[in-house]
Image (cartoon, rainbow, N blue to C red):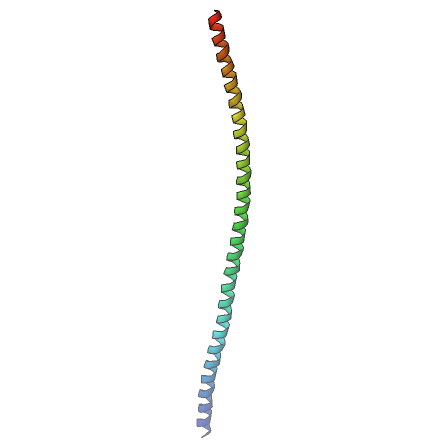
Length: 101
């Protein structure tokens, strides 16, 4: 009789142990899964913010480059205007010298 009680308690203990360890394992794995999900999201957000900051810096550099290019174009226009004026005067002088010759 004691043997039957011992075997019944042993089976019941084994079943309870399996159920307890299964629930415990499920809870622990779920906690790790949540932790794993949150880290890549934080990392992804950090990378996105770094990318945005880099893009803003590039945009500022491009703006500065465009400003310098506009200044250079303005100087080129001035040089071309001076060159046109010099050529016009040279043409006028050459026309004035031809009739005199």
